[in-house]
Amino acid sequence: MHHINWRRVIIGGLVCGLVSNVVEFLLNSVLLREDWRAALRALGKPEQFGAGQMAAFVVWGFLVGTFAVWLYAELRPYYGAGPKTAAIAGVSVWFLGYLLATVAPLVMQLFPGRLMLIGLAVGLAEAVVATIAGAWVYRGVSAQGASPAAPGA
Image 1 (cartoon, one colour):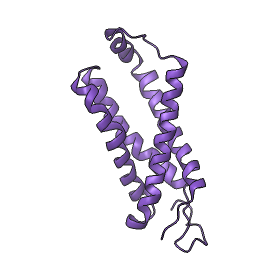
Image 2: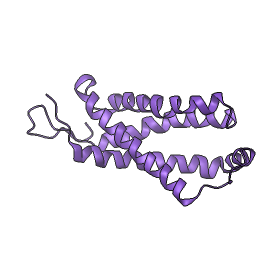
Image 3: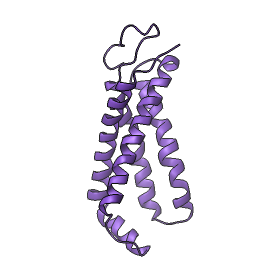
């Protein structure tokens, strides 16, 4: 039976979420700012998000980060510790949290397809790199529950 170090899942999840939030901010609030303003204007929505909306996006980033590190911890007994397993967890999180979540807005053409596809492409790299960063922080408990795994495991 394998044990999960929940303290490290939370800490790793915060690191993973921080990386995701920084990438999302740079992509959407800096690089694609005017594109998103135009897209929101076309929908008749305010061109800038309010504080509550921004807070929700930040919380979402940390929740997804925590889920990614938990998934990494769950996959370690099957695939081994390290960046390969973290990348598998990151791709899985991207598939569930980014790709599938984008299908409906893409099909309904709510936002320009170009913006959605850029978000998906950057999101894939973001999810993998962020999960590897969070997994680096994670240190699971061995099967005997006695000793923590090596750093970066």
